[in-house]
Length: 407
Ligand code: PLP
Image 1 (cartoon, helix red, strand yellow):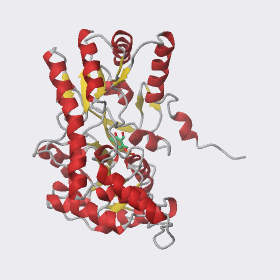
Image 2 (cartoon, rainbow, N blue to C red; image 1 turned 90 degrees about the vertical axis):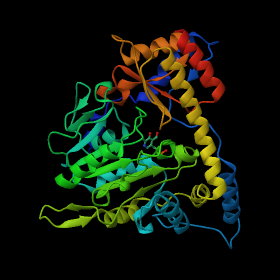
Image 3 (cartoon, helix red, strand yellow; image 1 turned 90 degrees about the horizontal axis):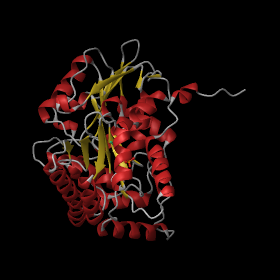
Protein backbone atom coordinates (compact mmCIF):
# COMPACT_ATOMS: atom_id res chain seq x y z
CA UNK A 1 0.00 0.00 0.00
CA UNK A 2 1.39 3.36 -0.99
CA UNK A 3 1.06 5.88 1.84
CA UNK A 4 0.42 9.54 1.23
CA UNK A 5 2.77 12.27 2.40
CA UNK A 6 0.38 13.42 5.12
CA UNK A 7 1.98 16.84 5.33
CA UNK A 8 0.11 17.69 2.12
CA UNK A 9 -3.16 17.07 3.94
CA UNK A 10 -2.32 19.80 6.44
CA UNK A 11 -2.34 22.46 3.72
CA UNK A 12 -5.51 24.55 3.77
CA UNK A 13 -7.68 23.57 0.80
CA UNK A 14 -8.37 27.08 -0.29
CA UNK A 15 -5.87 28.70 -2.61
CA UNK A 16 -6.25 32.47 -2.29
CA UNK A 17 -6.61 33.26 -6.00
CA UNK A 18 -8.98 30.34 -6.58
CA UNK A 19 -11.13 31.67 -3.73
CA UNK A 20 -11.16 35.12 -5.28
CA UNK A 21 -12.02 33.71 -8.73
CA UNK A 22 -14.93 31.77 -7.21
CA UNK A 23 -16.39 34.88 -5.62
CA UNK A 24 -15.86 36.99 -8.75
CA UNK A 25 -17.53 34.30 -10.90
CA UNK A 26 -20.49 34.18 -8.53
CA UNK A 27 -20.81 37.96 -8.84
CA UNK A 28 -20.60 37.78 -12.65
CA UNK A 29 -23.23 35.07 -12.77
CA UNK A 30 -25.60 37.34 -10.82
CA UNK A 31 -24.60 40.47 -12.80
CA UNK A 32 -23.80 39.29 -16.32
CA UNK A 33 -23.58 42.85 -17.70
CA UNK A 34 -21.16 44.12 -15.03
CA UNK A 35 -17.80 45.38 -16.28
CA UNK A 36 -15.41 43.98 -13.66
CA UNK A 37 -11.86 45.39 -13.46
CA UNK A 38 -9.19 43.37 -11.69
CA UNK A 39 -6.55 45.13 -9.62
CA UNK A 40 -6.08 41.79 -7.90
CA UNK A 41 -3.80 39.21 -9.45
CA UNK A 42 -0.09 39.97 -9.64
CA UNK A 43 0.37 39.14 -13.32
CA UNK A 44 1.84 41.51 -15.88
CA UNK A 45 -0.18 42.67 -18.89
CA UNK A 46 2.30 44.49 -21.17
CA UNK A 47 3.66 42.44 -24.08
CA UNK A 48 7.25 41.24 -24.44
CA UNK A 49 9.52 44.00 -25.72
CA UNK A 50 10.94 43.96 -29.23
CA UNK A 51 14.51 43.06 -28.27
CA UNK A 52 13.23 39.96 -26.44
CA UNK A 53 10.89 38.94 -29.26
CA UNK A 54 13.63 39.29 -31.89
CA UNK A 55 16.06 37.20 -29.82
CA UNK A 56 13.41 34.53 -29.27
CA UNK A 57 12.50 34.43 -32.99
CA UNK A 58 16.16 33.96 -33.85
CA UNK A 59 16.47 31.23 -31.23
CA UNK A 60 13.46 29.41 -32.69
CA UNK A 61 15.09 29.60 -36.13
CA UNK A 62 18.28 28.12 -34.69
CA UNK A 63 16.21 25.27 -33.28
CA UNK A 64 14.83 24.70 -36.78
CA UNK A 65 18.14 23.84 -38.37
CA UNK A 66 20.25 20.76 -37.62
CA UNK A 67 23.47 22.86 -37.56
CA UNK A 68 22.24 25.13 -34.80
CA UNK A 69 19.69 22.95 -33.02
CA UNK A 70 19.93 22.78 -29.21
CA UNK A 71 18.90 19.70 -27.25
CA UNK A 72 19.29 19.38 -23.49
CA UNK A 73 21.15 22.42 -22.22
CA UNK A 74 23.30 22.80 -19.11
CA UNK A 75 21.03 22.34 -16.06
CA UNK A 76 22.41 25.49 -14.45
CA UNK A 77 21.81 27.64 -17.57
CA UNK A 78 23.73 28.61 -20.70
CA UNK A 79 26.99 30.49 -20.17
CA UNK A 80 25.77 33.39 -22.36
CA UNK A 81 22.93 34.13 -19.92
CA UNK A 82 24.85 33.49 -16.72
CA UNK A 83 27.59 35.84 -17.86
CA UNK A 84 25.05 38.48 -18.89
CA UNK A 85 23.47 38.22 -15.42
CA UNK A 86 26.85 38.55 -13.67
CA UNK A 87 27.76 41.64 -15.68
CA UNK A 88 24.33 43.23 -16.03
CA UNK A 89 22.87 42.73 -12.57
CA UNK A 90 25.91 42.51 -10.28
CA UNK A 91 29.18 43.86 -11.72
CA UNK A 92 27.24 46.94 -12.81
CA UNK A 93 26.61 47.55 -9.08
CA UNK A 94 30.17 46.70 -8.05
CA UNK A 95 29.22 43.20 -6.83
CA UNK A 96 31.33 40.18 -7.68
CA UNK A 97 29.39 37.02 -8.41
CA UNK A 98 31.04 34.11 -10.19
CA UNK A 99 29.02 32.67 -13.07
CA UNK A 100 29.23 29.24 -11.37
CA UNK A 101 27.17 30.79 -8.54
CA UNK A 102 24.33 31.63 -10.96
CA UNK A 103 21.65 28.97 -11.47
CA UNK A 104 19.19 29.79 -14.24
CA UNK A 105 15.72 28.36 -13.67
CA UNK A 106 12.16 28.48 -14.99
CA UNK A 107 11.16 31.24 -12.55
CA UNK A 108 11.56 32.19 -8.93
CA UNK A 109 8.55 30.24 -7.71
CA UNK A 110 10.30 26.91 -8.38
CA UNK A 111 13.51 27.76 -6.56
CA UNK A 112 11.96 29.65 -3.63
CA UNK A 113 9.85 26.53 -3.19
CA UNK A 114 12.54 23.94 -3.83
CA UNK A 115 15.61 25.36 -2.15
CA UNK A 116 14.44 24.30 1.32
CA UNK A 117 15.12 20.69 0.23
CA UNK A 118 18.80 21.30 1.01
CA UNK A 119 18.28 21.74 4.73
CA UNK A 120 17.10 19.21 7.32
CA UNK A 121 13.39 18.94 8.00
CA UNK A 122 13.78 20.09 11.61
CA UNK A 123 15.35 23.48 10.92
CA UNK A 124 13.19 26.35 12.16
CA UNK A 125 11.92 28.91 9.67
CA UNK A 126 10.86 32.53 10.03
CA UNK A 127 8.90 34.65 7.57
CA UNK A 128 7.81 38.24 7.33
CA UNK A 129 4.04 38.43 7.67
CA UNK A 130 2.17 39.04 5.34
CA UNK A 131 4.12 36.97 2.86
CA UNK A 132 4.22 35.37 -0.62
CA UNK A 133 2.55 32.03 0.31
CA UNK A 134 5.01 29.73 -1.52
CA UNK A 135 7.66 30.02 1.21
CA UNK A 136 5.47 28.54 3.94
CA UNK A 137 3.52 26.08 1.81
CA UNK A 138 6.68 24.50 0.39
CA UNK A 139 8.02 24.01 3.93
CA UNK A 140 4.64 22.66 5.05
CA UNK A 141 4.80 20.01 2.32
CA UNK A 142 7.79 18.37 3.95
CA UNK A 143 6.49 18.77 7.51
CA UNK A 144 8.69 21.65 8.60
CA UNK A 145 5.86 24.15 9.18
CA UNK A 146 3.86 22.05 11.64
CA UNK A 147 0.07 22.39 11.58
CA UNK A 148 -2.31 25.32 11.08
CA UNK A 149 -3.75 26.62 14.36
CA UNK A 150 -5.94 29.71 14.24
CA UNK A 151 -4.61 30.78 10.84
CA UNK A 152 -0.93 30.29 11.80
CA UNK A 153 1.51 27.46 11.23
CA UNK A 154 2.65 26.10 14.57
CA UNK A 155 6.37 25.77 13.67
CA UNK A 156 6.77 29.03 11.77
CA UNK A 157 8.01 32.23 13.37
CA UNK A 158 6.12 35.20 11.99
CA UNK A 159 7.70 38.67 11.83
CA UNK A 160 4.66 40.98 11.70
CA UNK A 161 4.79 43.89 9.26
CA UNK A 162 2.05 46.38 10.01
CA UNK A 163 1.33 50.10 9.94
CA UNK A 164 2.48 50.23 13.59
CA UNK A 165 6.06 49.22 12.74
CA UNK A 166 6.06 50.95 9.35
CA UNK A 167 6.20 47.50 7.72
CA UNK A 168 9.76 47.06 8.99
CA UNK A 169 9.94 43.65 10.70
CA UNK A 170 11.67 43.31 14.06
CA UNK A 171 14.47 40.73 14.42
CA UNK A 172 13.37 37.43 15.98
CA UNK A 173 13.49 37.24 19.75
CA UNK A 174 14.29 33.52 19.63
CA UNK A 175 16.60 31.61 17.28
CA UNK A 176 15.48 30.94 13.71
CA UNK A 177 17.60 28.83 11.33
CA UNK A 178 16.22 30.07 8.01
CA UNK A 179 14.71 33.48 7.33
CA UNK A 180 12.68 34.35 4.26
CA UNK A 181 12.83 37.99 3.20
CA UNK A 182 11.20 39.47 0.09
CA UNK A 183 12.08 43.02 -0.95
CA UNK A 184 10.57 44.94 -2.64
CA UNK A 185 7.80 43.13 -0.85
CA UNK A 186 4.89 41.23 -2.24
CA UNK A 187 2.22 41.99 -1.01
CA UNK A 188 2.93 45.26 0.87
CA UNK A 189 5.04 46.95 -1.82
CA UNK A 190 7.40 48.23 0.89
CA UNK A 191 11.22 48.06 0.84
CA UNK A 192 14.01 47.66 3.41
CA UNK A 193 16.71 50.31 3.72
CA UNK A 194 20.35 49.24 3.65
CA UNK A 195 20.59 49.79 7.41
CA UNK A 196 17.56 47.56 8.07
CA UNK A 197 18.80 44.84 5.73
CA UNK A 198 22.21 44.99 7.42
CA UNK A 199 20.53 44.11 10.74
CA UNK A 200 19.19 40.90 9.19
CA UNK A 201 22.51 39.95 7.64
CA UNK A 202 24.25 40.56 10.97
CA UNK A 203 21.60 38.48 12.74
CA UNK A 204 22.20 35.64 10.28
CA UNK A 205 25.99 35.85 10.68
CA UNK A 206 25.84 35.94 14.49
CA UNK A 207 23.29 33.14 14.73
CA UNK A 208 24.65 30.92 11.95
CA UNK A 209 21.31 31.29 10.15
CA UNK A 210 20.49 31.43 6.44
CA UNK A 211 18.59 34.16 4.61
CA UNK A 212 16.55 33.26 1.53
CA UNK A 213 16.21 36.64 -0.17
CA UNK A 214 13.57 37.02 -2.86
CA UNK A 215 14.19 40.11 -4.97
CA UNK A 216 11.84 39.26 -7.83
CA UNK A 217 10.73 42.92 -7.91
CA UNK A 218 14.14 44.63 -7.67
CA UNK A 219 13.72 46.20 -11.14
CA UNK A 220 10.90 48.33 -9.71
CA UNK A 221 13.16 50.14 -7.23
CA UNK A 222 13.08 53.82 -8.13
CA UNK A 223 15.26 55.50 -5.50
CA UNK A 224 19.04 55.31 -5.29
CA UNK A 225 19.34 54.25 -1.65
CA UNK A 226 17.29 51.07 -1.57
CA UNK A 227 19.45 47.94 -2.04
CA UNK A 228 18.68 45.90 -5.17
CA UNK A 229 20.62 42.88 -3.97
CA UNK A 230 21.33 41.49 -0.53
CA UNK A 231 24.98 41.18 -1.60
CA UNK A 232 25.22 44.97 -1.29
CA UNK A 233 25.46 44.18 2.44
CA UNK A 234 28.85 43.12 3.77
CA UNK A 235 28.89 39.50 4.90
CA UNK A 236 25.80 38.47 2.89
CA UNK A 237 27.91 36.20 0.68
CA UNK A 238 28.36 33.99 3.76
CA UNK A 239 24.69 33.66 4.69
CA UNK A 240 22.31 34.58 1.86
CA UNK A 241 20.79 32.96 -1.21
CA UNK A 242 19.16 35.39 -3.66
CA UNK A 243 16.22 34.61 -5.97
CA UNK A 244 15.43 36.72 -9.03
CA UNK A 245 13.11 36.48 -11.97
CA UNK A 246 12.51 37.87 -15.45
CA UNK A 247 8.74 37.50 -14.83
CA UNK A 248 8.02 40.94 -13.47
CA UNK A 249 11.19 42.54 -14.82
CA UNK A 250 10.54 41.73 -18.47
CA UNK A 251 7.04 40.26 -18.71
CA UNK A 252 8.21 36.62 -18.63
CA UNK A 253 5.33 35.19 -16.58
CA UNK A 254 4.27 33.17 -19.63
CA UNK A 255 7.81 32.58 -20.98
CA UNK A 256 9.42 31.33 -17.74
CA UNK A 257 12.95 32.26 -16.75
CA UNK A 258 14.62 33.36 -13.54
CA UNK A 259 17.76 32.64 -11.57
CA UNK A 260 19.17 31.93 -8.13
CA UNK A 261 22.51 33.06 -6.74
CA UNK A 262 24.24 30.60 -4.42
CA UNK A 263 27.59 32.07 -3.28
CA UNK A 264 30.31 29.50 -2.64
CA UNK A 265 30.86 30.86 0.89
CA UNK A 266 27.37 29.90 2.12
CA UNK A 267 27.71 26.72 4.17
CA UNK A 268 25.48 24.68 6.45
CA UNK A 269 26.49 22.24 9.17
CA UNK A 270 26.26 18.47 9.49
CA UNK A 271 25.30 17.11 12.93
CA UNK A 272 29.01 16.37 13.43
CA UNK A 273 29.79 20.04 12.86
CA UNK A 274 31.36 19.71 9.42
CA UNK A 275 30.52 22.60 7.05
CA UNK A 276 29.00 21.87 3.64
CA UNK A 277 28.78 24.50 0.87
CA UNK A 278 25.26 24.90 -0.52
CA UNK A 279 26.50 25.81 -4.01
CA UNK A 280 27.72 22.26 -4.67
CA UNK A 281 24.57 20.71 -3.21
CA UNK A 282 22.29 22.92 -5.29
CA UNK A 283 24.30 22.07 -8.42
CA UNK A 284 23.86 18.39 -7.63
CA UNK A 285 20.16 18.81 -6.94
CA UNK A 286 19.52 20.74 -10.15
CA UNK A 287 21.43 18.19 -12.26
CA UNK A 288 19.18 15.46 -10.87
CA UNK A 289 15.81 17.19 -10.83
CA UNK A 290 15.90 20.05 -13.35
CA UNK A 291 16.55 20.10 -17.08
CA UNK A 292 17.13 23.81 -17.44
CA UNK A 293 14.99 26.62 -18.81
CA UNK A 294 14.40 26.39 -22.55
CA UNK A 295 17.06 27.73 -24.93
CA UNK A 296 14.50 30.10 -26.44
CA UNK A 297 13.56 31.54 -23.02
CA UNK A 298 17.21 32.00 -22.09
CA UNK A 299 17.96 33.81 -25.36
CA UNK A 300 14.98 36.06 -24.65
CA UNK A 301 16.21 36.72 -21.10
CA UNK A 302 19.74 37.51 -22.34
CA UNK A 303 18.27 40.13 -24.70
CA UNK A 304 17.08 42.16 -21.69
CA UNK A 305 20.76 42.98 -21.01
CA UNK A 306 21.45 44.48 -24.45
CA UNK A 307 21.28 48.30 -24.65
CA UNK A 308 17.98 48.16 -26.61
CA UNK A 309 16.56 45.49 -24.29
CA UNK A 310 17.44 47.52 -21.20
CA UNK A 311 15.71 50.62 -22.54
CA UNK A 312 12.61 48.71 -23.58
CA UNK A 313 12.30 46.86 -20.27
CA UNK A 314 12.77 50.14 -18.41
CA UNK A 315 9.93 51.70 -20.41
CA UNK A 316 7.53 48.90 -19.46
CA UNK A 317 8.43 49.20 -15.79
CA UNK A 318 7.97 52.98 -16.01
CA UNK A 319 4.49 52.35 -17.43
CA UNK A 320 3.48 50.23 -14.42
CA UNK A 321 5.13 52.61 -11.97
CA UNK A 322 3.20 55.53 -13.50
CA UNK A 323 0.04 53.57 -12.74
CA UNK A 324 1.28 53.04 -9.18
CA UNK A 325 2.06 56.74 -8.76
CA UNK A 326 -1.35 57.73 -10.02
CA UNK A 327 -3.06 55.20 -7.74
CA UNK A 328 -1.13 56.47 -4.72
CA UNK A 329 -1.94 60.10 -5.48
CA UNK A 330 -5.65 59.52 -5.99
CA UNK A 331 -6.14 57.28 -2.96
CA UNK A 332 -4.08 59.43 -0.59
CA UNK A 333 -5.85 62.58 -1.78
CA UNK A 334 -9.08 60.89 -0.72
CA UNK A 335 -7.64 60.20 2.72
CA UNK A 336 -6.95 56.46 2.31
CA UNK A 337 -4.00 54.99 4.19
CA UNK A 338 -1.81 53.39 1.52
CA UNK A 339 1.75 52.00 1.54
CA UNK A 340 4.04 50.65 -1.19
CA UNK A 341 3.66 51.76 -4.80
CA UNK A 342 6.88 53.81 -4.75
CA UNK A 343 9.45 51.07 -5.36
CA UNK A 344 7.08 48.22 -6.20
CA UNK A 345 4.03 47.55 -8.39
CA UNK A 346 1.90 46.78 -5.31
CA UNK A 347 -0.13 49.09 -3.08
CA UNK A 348 -1.14 48.00 0.38
CA UNK A 349 -4.34 49.66 1.45
CA UNK A 350 -5.77 49.80 4.98
CA UNK A 351 -9.47 49.00 5.06
CA UNK A 352 -11.82 51.12 7.20
CA UNK A 353 -11.72 50.30 10.90
CA UNK A 354 -13.97 47.46 11.93
CA UNK A 355 -14.05 45.91 8.45
CA UNK A 356 -12.24 42.67 7.53
CA UNK A 357 -10.22 42.40 4.34
CA UNK A 358 -12.72 39.89 2.85
CA UNK A 359 -15.65 42.15 3.76
CA UNK A 360 -13.90 45.07 2.03
CA UNK A 361 -13.16 42.85 -0.98
CA UNK A 362 -16.90 42.12 -1.27
CA UNK A 363 -17.77 45.80 -0.95
CA UNK A 364 -15.28 46.73 -3.72
CA UNK A 365 -16.64 43.97 -5.94
CA UNK A 366 -20.32 44.68 -5.41
CA UNK A 367 -20.01 48.47 -5.05
CA UNK A 368 -17.38 49.29 -7.67
CA UNK A 369 -16.95 46.08 -9.69
CA UNK A 370 -13.24 46.21 -8.86
CA UNK A 371 -11.31 43.15 -7.70
CA UNK A 372 -8.63 43.53 -5.02
CA UNK A 373 -6.76 40.88 -3.03
CA UNK A 374 -7.71 40.47 0.65
CA UNK A 375 -4.59 40.95 2.73
CA UNK A 376 -5.41 38.15 5.16
CA UNK A 377 -4.78 35.69 2.30
CA UNK A 378 -1.07 36.55 2.68
CA UNK A 379 -0.92 35.85 6.41
CA UNK A 380 -2.47 36.85 9.74
CA UNK A 381 -0.91 40.35 9.77
CA UNK A 382 -2.56 41.02 6.40
CA UNK A 383 -5.98 41.24 8.08
CA UNK A 384 -7.30 44.77 7.78
CA UNK A 385 -5.56 45.44 4.45
CA UNK A 386 -6.04 44.71 0.74
CA UNK A 387 -3.48 44.60 -2.06
CA UNK A 388 -3.93 46.53 -5.30
CA UNK A 389 -1.64 45.99 -8.28
CA UNK A 390 -0.37 48.47 -10.86
CA UNK A 391 -0.10 45.85 -13.61
CA UNK A 392 -3.29 46.88 -15.45
CA UNK A 393 -3.60 49.15 -18.47
CA UNK A 394 -3.61 52.89 -17.78
CA UNK A 395 -7.21 53.34 -18.93
CA UNK A 396 -8.62 50.48 -16.88
CA UNK A 397 -6.63 51.49 -13.82
CA UNK A 398 -7.96 55.05 -14.09
CA UNK A 399 -11.48 53.76 -14.50
CA UNK A 400 -11.08 51.45 -11.48
CA UNK A 401 -9.85 54.33 -9.34
CA UNK A 402 -12.75 56.56 -10.32
CA UNK A 403 -15.11 53.86 -9.20
CA UNK A 404 -13.22 53.15 -5.98
CA UNK A 405 -13.14 56.74 -4.79
CA UNK A 406 -16.90 57.02 -5.38
CA UNK A 407 -17.46 54.10 -2.99
N1 PLP B 1 8.50 35.74 -5.68
C1 PLP B 1 7.52 36.63 -5.45
C2 PLP B 1 7.63 37.50 -4.26
C3 PLP B 1 6.42 36.72 -6.31
O1 PLP B 1 5.47 37.61 -6.06
C4 PLP B 1 6.35 35.85 -7.42
C5 PLP B 1 5.21 35.87 -8.33
O2 PLP B 1 4.23 36.52 -8.19
C6 PLP B 1 7.38 34.94 -7.60
C7 PLP B 1 8.44 34.90 -6.72
C8 PLP B 1 7.35 33.95 -8.72
O3 PLP B 1 7.82 34.47 -9.86
P1 PLP B 1 8.12 33.55 -11.12
O4 PLP B 1 7.11 33.93 -12.16
O5 PLP B 1 9.51 33.91 -11.49
O6 PLP B 1 8.01 32.12 -10.74
